[in-house]
Image (cartoon, rainbow, N blue to C red):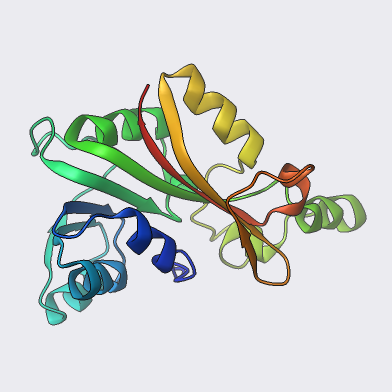
Length: 201
């Protein structure tokens, strides 16, 4: 199990309104939900497939369901949540379009973060060494990575517009710990990661 980065937490806190209903898909050990409950007083539910991570969520006093988010979110009705979060999990999903559609069915807004496979360091590693870096895989070698899809920011942004999803807000993570809400020239080459707030167009 790879560690979900916490660098997105302040941005997610900024976007999530006080007292909202939040569904965190692939919630890991529940750190994000615990943070949101403490700072934004949200009513949060986590979904996680790992038994080990579920036990950690329960130890934090969180409400969590064991489920495979790749199948569907049929246990929840339309509009059950204000925000549905998918933090650093999109790359491991088999049917990403289906999951995004379900997120925006059960929630008013979706928050999705992705690592940028188009980032310059990833490209240089493939060019120079002929292999994908372990950081891009979110683990060690090719045989034990949870990552199924290597997507660039440009690909992601283009594809979600094709399925009728609007980008309300975005943040881009550049080297030297620079986080910008402006899409710089060559952002698809220079940004390591992006996080997006989405809704139905």
